[in-house]
Every structure is written in structure tokens, then in C-alpha cells.
Length: 324
Image 1 (cartoon, rainbow, N blue to C red):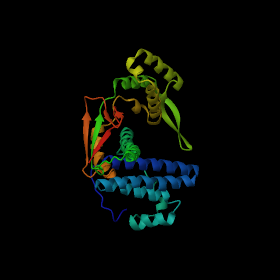
Image 2: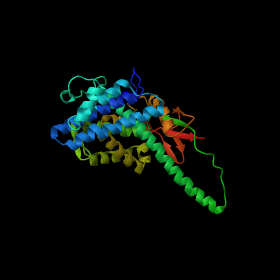
Image 3: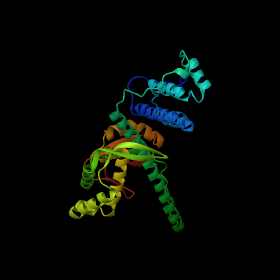
Image 4: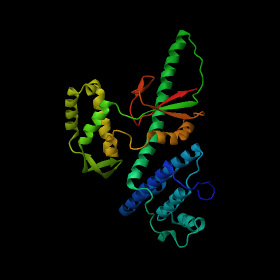
């Protein structure tokens, strides 16, 4: 990692910053578990989880043809060596003295400090962008799988009738359609939920077997919110038109707010979605094997893009139309 990989220097991109934020998470969790003397968890966070994060970072770098950031990776390796030193002391001492050429023992090195170049608000936005990339790719792959199953079923039916169709081959190009505004009824729902949010509240969120305390929450219970939304729908034709979809969207949005905080209730994305997609487009094209690249189009006039019966009509859910 230190000697053989070509790195770049200078300004950090979204993935560089995301790596710093993820490293901070690993540093905090490892420290927490050393204090609790739960050593299997210190190995999990300082080795296994961090290794997974570095793998994502390396994959992004390789597929985009953009070298990883030197300062970012040096911080990762140094922090990992210090965190692992009570567990794998001889190996860490070798890296510390013979590779990094540090004086003194790794066992008395200061605990890794958290990153100060990225403040808390920026870190939250960076992770929203990183999650947005993962969610976008997953959504596209899920749609591809669904389309293949549908095509296979249709082909089997046509074969029985003796019909044949020319296969044009795999897609090579994609166009992302992006909506910059929520439909009116969704903005009404978001405004309503935001009025029920209290930043001063504290709540406990389960993360696997662990429980974490988070700031902010809904000031009233879910049952009361659902009842109030139902009463609003009777008086609002746009909400009424959504039918059963309304309660599904309501439940999904409440869940998102409980996980991500108040940003899930904003009327627009907390970051520039188009600019973010353009930065990610090279990686997405490589990951989806679209050799002729991806274009990003903003749909200002229409409510959504319809393809194979799916309608996408809100920010945060770009729709990729693929072609040969």
C-alpha cells in the first residue's frame, strides 16, 4: 500500500473525504471497544470493517482511473497500525519502524486523531453522497435483474408460438434522468413531517446488536402521525389520489428520518445531485459495463420518466435509460 501504489495529491474528491469519515468511524468504534475490553470487536473495526472500506475506495479508484489520495491512504495505514498494535504487536512494530521509519515504538504512539479538515456538517453530506452512489447502483442492478426475468419469461412464451426476435446485444450507453423537485403532494407530506420533528429530542437507534443515541426525533408517536395524515388526505385531493401509496411513502420517509435525521425531510437534496452524478458517472459506467459512458439530463418539465412501467418522479432517485 505504501511502496507500490501510485497516489495523487492536492484537492480531495467525494470518495477521498468519505474514506476519512469512515476511518473516523473505525477509530471511534475501536477506541470504544478497547475501553470495554471487547477485543473481538476491536479487531472487527480496526481490521475487517476498515479493510472493507478501503476495498470500496480502491475499487472506485481503479474503475475511474483516478489514483487514491496519498494523504488519505497514509492516514489510513498509520491509524490501522496503531489501532492493531495491542493485538498484532510484532507486525505493527515492523510496519511502524521499518516501513514508516518512525522513531520509538508503535506501542507508545499517540492514539489516531480524528480528521479536522472535514467538519461535522460536511461529513454528513459526504456520507449522504457516498450512500447515494451505492443506492443508485443497487437500484439499477435490481431493475436489470427484474428486466432479465421478465424478458426470459416473455421469450419462453414466444418460443412456444414459434416467434423469434433479434438480440441487439448488451447495452453500452446510459442517460440518467434527474428530477430536481418533489411532486406537490410529497412536498406537503414532508412539510407535515418536518412540523412534527424536534431537534432537542434524543432517541436510541439499533445498529446490529448495539444501540446508539442520536439527536432529534418525532415529537409524537407514529400512530398519531398516521391518523393526522389520514385526516389531511380527506381534505387534500392530491394526497387522496395517492391511495395506499401515501401510507407506504409516509412510513418510508419516517424511517429514513429516524436513520438520517432531519435531512430526510428536506424539499430538495442536501447536495447538488446533478454535479454528484457527473462526478460518479465514470465509476457507474465502469461498474455497469457501459463502455460508451453516461450522460446526465435534468427533467424540468415532466413529472417523471416512465420505462417498463416504473415511474421515477423525485430527487434522489435518478432513472437510467440504457441503449446499445
